[in-house]
Image (cartoon, rainbow, N blue to C red):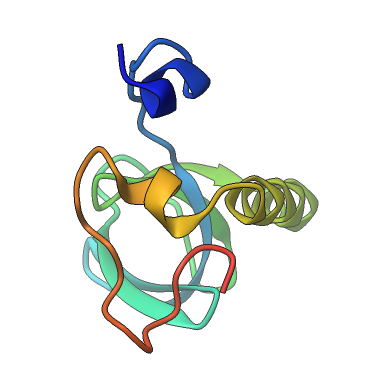
Length: 107
């Protein structure tokens, strides 16, 4: 097993849901912002979500609504985690390094 895979817990990968704030809603889609990045996501799993709500986003969908305190705590922990790894360690399993000059983990 590769050294970097051992450090990550045996080479097993996981997915994360990222907290984001809803800035606009149109039908079953919302625009969300996290860390200055804006994305469009689906609200099919959380149709009650509204502008100003924080939601956990996974695979392009809001999967749950969370209060602002929990969202901010999660974002803080994700920043700390990202800052504890180099970009090479964070992206070595996919090869998806951010383009030079684009914001990335810990930058």
